[in-house]
Length: 248
Ligand SMILES: [Zn+2]
Image 1 (tube, rainbow, N blue to C red):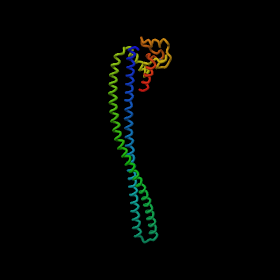
Image 2: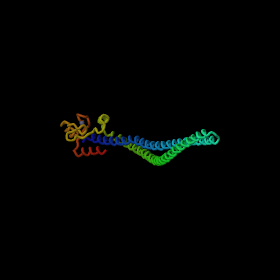
Image 3: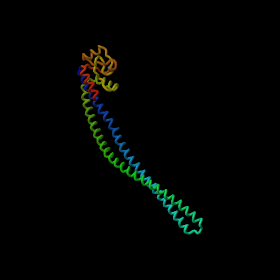
Image 4: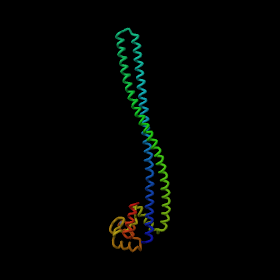
């Protein structure tokens, strides 16, 4: 194999490692957002329950006041009954008092319902607060782990890029430009093996002359179909290279 092709393959491996680190780095942001959204959701759940509880208490207070007003009204009617000498008026006041009592009884039933609702809400709120505490601790932990991971990946990328810089020094300029252009255009692997007379990149059958020239290894040969840089290796080497590709 041509020494410069060997260097290019090393460079290609290095670029694959850099891509891997970059794709892992790109996932950190969304993971951070997901952790924060989970915390916000737990906060919103607790807040919504707290509000409902407050509303139920306010409603109950309103019913209490309304019942008090009816009680006072009933007391006034009872007082008027004591003061009247008219039998009809007395009976009419008695009916008014009954109406007030019925109303008070209804308001008391509604208060009891609200007390039950508040008890249920209090229980739900306690649970939501416990869950929130748990989620807060987990979120803090997850965010700290993500920060750490991001820093480690950034350090790794810096290291890999420095190594890449050193590798590019050993590849002749025009070949390096060709490689960079191919990578920019096609992405992924652009230095590919010839496998059973087929280009390892585009999988088109190669002319015999191209296969022979690649095998001779005296100059850099490109696939006439896709333009990728070809190298000739035994099937075992190519299989190993593809296995490495699949694993990464
Ligand atoms: Zn090709």
